[in-house]
Amino acid sequence: MTEEVSLSRLLWACRRGMLELDVLFMPFAKEAYSDLSQQHKLSFQRLLTCEDPELFAWFMGHKTCPDPDLAEIVDVILKRVKL
Image: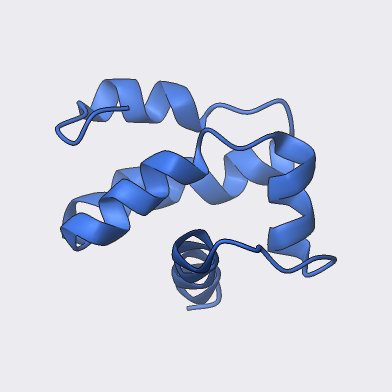
């Protein structure tokens, strides 16, 4: 995805094969994406290119994301969900 991705394209990319990921990504994209720093926006866009099993493992705490930038945005999303 490009730096200036439209919200509609971003929301389309948030649609996953796993309901658990949809429940995380869709509200986050709608409610929090616009408030993110540019770096976090880019990290979120990159996160959406990852495979569902990887994402599920990272968000459920089964595995740690090896990429520090992606691990940071995972943490940002998880903290927002816990509010």
